[in-house]
Length: 193
Image 1 (spheres, rainbow, N blue to C red):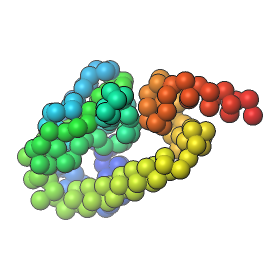
Image 2: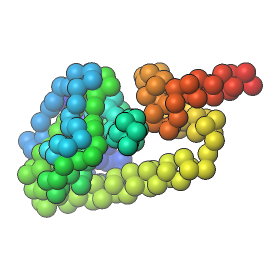
Image 3: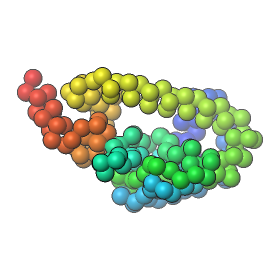
């Protein structure tokens, strides 16, 4: 377990004393996940919150037409879960899948509740990190409703260029809300410019 990655992430957002970090570490477990393995599927209850030390995960849903729509990809130093399911013990409509062999740090519900109740820097970190995530998702949703396919792809290239090297194009298309054929046409158009 690489404690420094997690501590660096905490300190990116809040002051996180070493003594509090030492209280947190015994509550976290290390998990190795193979490529294409699921952490939860639609209908499951999300039992853990995950921090990615190494690898890439995607969270997605399946729409009424049976098409997969990627909500987001998370790579190193990112968090993944489905908090509504996790906190309320209710089935999720989402899926969380590893797109690469991944090393994760996981915290279960009992330990998470203890941590947010007893380790104030962790609580502040999660509040602020959740605000960042909510802003990002709202921004992306707003942009997606007004952007052309070409604008969506250009935004993706500007905001997440590292994912282009790590993900198959059909996954990127599902994230951008277009078919792989449309993405192919958009890419050819951009290259031709």
